[in-house]
Length: 412
Image 1: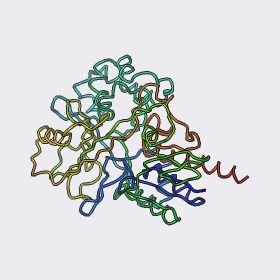
Image 2: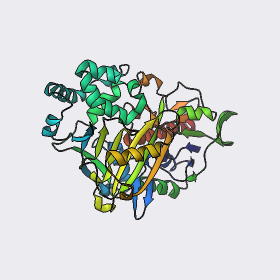
Image 3: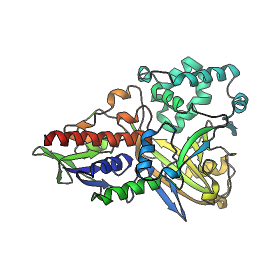
Image 4: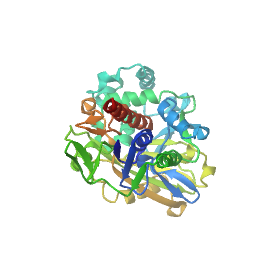
């Protein structure tokens, strides 16, 4: 079969790599680089992801792919610490003592929060799909726990759309992050950067005679004479990994509208450390970014020779005007950083960074096959109720299996 893949992110590369062994595969990526939200910058003599990344101990499909690509010896485990920036002060929230000393919650509220964290792992998330996260937390833990603890988390991930997010996503998030030690959370990273996973996938596809077209966007798809075409070329099967509404815009099937959001992520290299040793700092105070992610409080500073920090922001529609300037100015002031302490900074913007898991989202998830065209990505069942590298890899593998089964049936 001749197969076209739209999008060179993790899902597209995984699907292409699975299918290229038995089929003719063309992969199209609009950017000059592969990886999508897992792409990286090459800075001086190191690589750093455009958007902060780590993995979790339960990411079995990711670990299998890392092993297949010969990178297992580079997978390492570090402690990721967390905290909140509230009332112009940094509060670490890792050890039992730090949590007890956090002034924004009472002792009773902390006990209720601990109980919810324990129970999250046993909760049937399907029952929470239609319940707003804020409503769920306020009913179970109170308004103060929501505003002082959970709203900053929702804000850092979903920005202005945080009140639309379902409790299913939030409880899933709590369950994933409940595997903690007494000093922080055990998180994984590939020594040298996740770009190595993208690079080895690319090499694997090309080595099996797959063709990867970078800076070559698909501007139209159409169904003619019983077959789908992409940019006028006919394929036996097409896999689209872009947002369903973007596929619809260029001629794909009309489906229920999945809510999406954009991401604006600024990466800075600094002369010194500014978050008091904390890796992930959620902003309770109002700021033009929802979280400060200090990469070199997670991965050793010595690998880079400078302190790497991300400023994470999400938006709906178009990116806010002058957001980069607003981010910088706020960061300089809030963390007492001078301009000459910043070695460099870069802004990454993706208007289709990922779905927003609003109430009722489960009913919007499309099947892998839609009118003979295949779709997989951030919007797939494997990425609900938590989007992740794990979910994207599973989506790529499962959609490849769908096509392989169709090919087998056709031959028999």
